[in-house]
Image 1 (cartoon, rainbow, N blue to C red):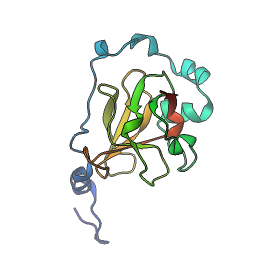
Image 2: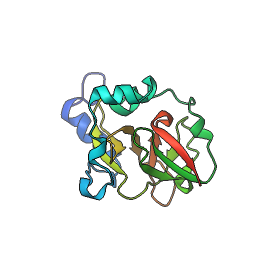
Image 3: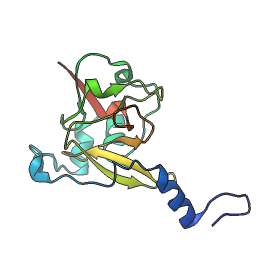
Image 4: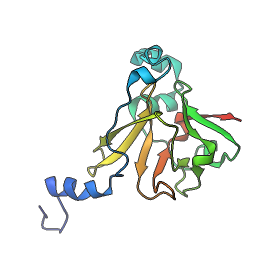
Length: 166
């Protein structure tokens, strides 16, 4: 439906916005049996709060978003691996990182079986949100405006990552 201001509303908004969801990034879950130490990372909210600094806790466990241009990892260019700040699980090899100009570390692909996705409706229009497959920590959102060969941009919160140099 279109309202009197000419804006899509209700089901029409959701249907129209679905065209912007990355085709390769549909809601997906990884088989826990394929993830090393999966059960070890089933922590309570209280345990996560004690384990993580406040900003990392807000992003990883409460799905907050850090301000752009605040993470030193945005400028990280060394060879290595970007891992989940919650559990240390390898998420992105450094050769998959690119400068998106968005102010957040961005990647065009990830380590196989490292991420799970779900549809997020917090901004009304649906977006594809992704999480660490091992601990479930929120990392960011994936969009269809990345470089070849995938055409995807995994836009990651820097505070949700650590960097392990090669």
